[in-house]
Length: 220
Image 1 (cartoon, rainbow, N blue to C red):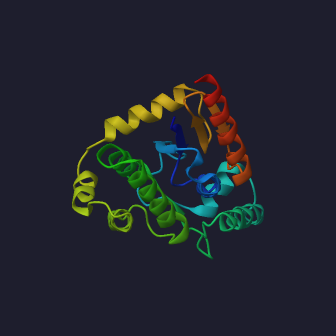
Image 2 (cartoon, one colour):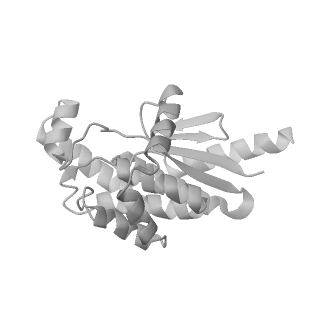
Image 3 (cartoon, helix red, strand yellow):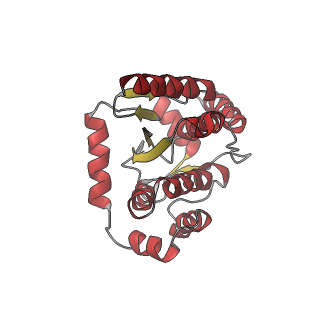
């Protein structure tokens, strides 16, 4: 039986990148012994973010009520955690926080018209766009470049970005998960039943997946 993982997250969430890196290491350690299928689900940390975004330290100090120095310490800690799980962030960090809704539309498209592996590739490339390359997410060419690196159809992606396609579907998915009580990310839902929250280390993901797989086998 294939274990289904719904990875609820946002492109603008550094802990979501850390969590994905940890999950990928866990899946590599597990190998083919436990078949797993990941589906990436949308969540927006800043749905009201206007075009142009907001300078990152201005945004984070306002959001968390911390000083710039305190935010830098936290950001350096996250950057170190990300590097440990194979997700190197830009040495100078991201400069702005951007609206991520268009990125979520592309991720939805990849899952709908391709397969979970393609969606996974695109999710990773969009996180790389945001945190490793640290480029402007409002510039659609940067989103299309991520699509190209993921090996997907760039012409189709451009058409989606130039239209309203998949807006209603992504909104519906967002509402589904918030109605389930998901208010922080990453949130990892396994087999529609088990919930892991936060950027868990690889060993925690591996232990959970092995335990769930054993319980599933016992029931069959």
